[in-house]
Figure: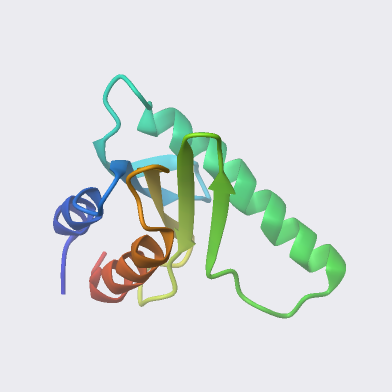
Amino acid sequence: MANTETSLKEAASIDGAIGAALVDYTSGMALGTIGGGKELDLNVAAAGNTDVVRAKVRAMEMLGLNDEIEDILITLGTHYHLIRLLKGRNTNGLFLYLALHKDRANLAMARHQLKKIENELEV
């Protein structure tokens, strides 16, 4: 099992990664971040993407969809933003957030690697 720091380092090593965060969507707070730099404020991204997750959860409830969100993809002109809701023990209310350069990332591989990171994460 991997801790938060190890998991974020692994996420940051994904091809094209700009930055990653582990976020508590009940509070909107980032529990850990890596990367981002001048290109992306990961604490602001954590708070903003919390609103995205909450809105999708509400929409699913209103539609009566009895299912779980695996991940949410936001495609920008130059970036992919992946939000992966965590399902493991002690991870309720958490998501992994990964921002990628669109021209350097393999989206399918990034999703696969995030799922692997989720499975190994121990919070």
